[in-house]
Length: 196
Image (cartoon, rainbow, N blue to C red; front, top):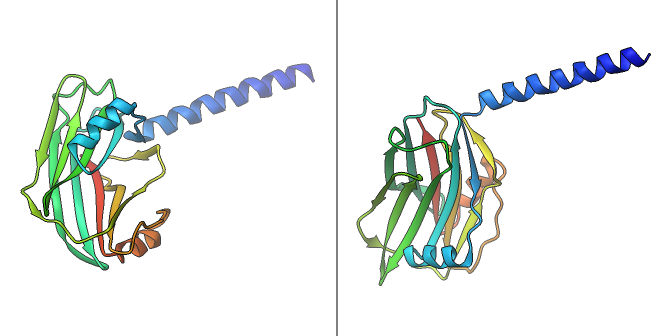
């Protein structure tokens, strides 16, 4: 009986180790929130009125570039893509986390989008031209639960920003139906990441 218990214990450990390796091999990259110090948060506030930062750990050497997009919806209708930005991952050291920053900066009655991909040894950034800012009284980021895994060539929702005339909005996106409901607000900006 004692040997049977030891055999089952070793078999269970072996099975767990094998299944963990399979799971890790299937994950091409992992995206998670970044905990900012007050100083870092203050610097992010200087960059834009509404900004968000994520940490991306690349786990697949085949990853060549990251594509960031911000799509704009007005009352449920897609208005277009506000920001489209790609950055090569070839020159970036992916042994350490890569940071993704998306910010919206208001200047008088106009705004612009800023995207940045920052690694330990290099960075790439992009900003859009100034455009008219929609009339709103409140802005709300709707976070996506992190960390989450992403496969190569999978376009992944990473966050949304709602601009509302009716005050702050409380929303939670757990499904495609939740996202469709969020689209119905005055102005909604949907952030996606795609790694190729």
